[in-house]
Length: 522
Image (cartoon, rainbow, N blue to C red; front, side, top):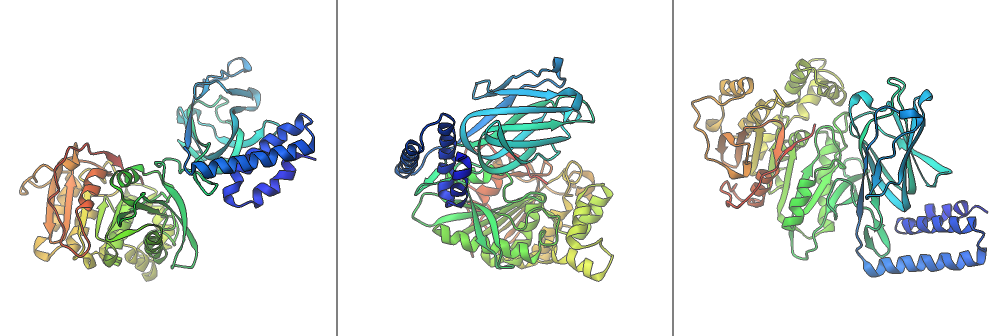
């Protein structure tokens, strides 16, 4: 009887917390059968191993997770029909090339030396010229029995998310266009040797995020569906702040934005990174009722997972996340203590015109979201309007709202600075608004009119100094010397000072800081 076949149902049917342990047992039982060890001995050893592993897991409660980085050194030509190994796993050459140049097919095999959980694989090609046109990933516990796990997307870097156990990982590359072995700079994958353990349950860490960030699933009031998110809970009994961080226009909840979690870990905050229907390429995303209710439902659920300080629930986002942050500020101002929005889109109809003129694919995404182009019909125009923050943001006047944009965005980035300036105007008192001519000047010339006095230096913006700043009650606009980016230190340090139902606090304590200027994604 095949050992893997006999144990497979047990692995698949077991509660999730037991599956990893059972996968290890299956591997060792398979090897014992190969060596003709009797069934009775196998049974005794299996249960001993099962009990021992679970006992050890229960006793330790928290083990460590290891992220293995495999650096690949491979030539772009296939020399003499035999590839150069040159692939290191933790310093050991356990990787080989093999292939058939005549068929334009090569295989890259990794031997992990033990069964491990594989949560994700990332391949970075050396150049687009040598990028493989097809890269199918196979995994298994021996080289004779490997199963197809998925195909890497034809982008750089290529990322495949998995949640499976294996000892061997094989990439099968084909490139009929160039007839050359793929040139690969690096292959990175997460190997969960242990992970966090709760009652024997091994919970994999999330690739690209600090340890402690977990996947959760919550019930959305939008349509009674289960929706995913990432969540971090500090080890604290007293009430803690909650940071709700929103992914960008083309991202989803798995998008690696570790700076948010690093701040929360350092300051003892909880963090929520919801999905709100993923990339903005479908009608359920991009400011829809589904997306709005997804975020609010996620916040409600997060409050059941940790002791959240009700006066310190903060919202932050950049790019598409900035769009949604401004929208949520207007749609549900009572939910937040403060909102920080960076390089966000405030008027979708205007952005369609701008991205169409710039030949950016966001215009096509907006057509999918709103079911047509602006002006096509009144129903299509209504879709563009009801998903635009500029329609609602006046309702956020009592809410501390910090809007930020880089002066070069729209030239070196995808969202002209006018979107943030116009959003500020809608939330500001009429006497504090920025004249339309000045908005046009800043947008076109990437500079501030000379009639405005340069603001005092704000150390939280680091090497991207603030060029223009205006405050109206609880709303502030800052235009800095940068592009389509978010400066986490400035965003999070400002949020830290705010409290629900209190006036905005604009003066921040000056400490020694090293602001990180991070691309905001797309």
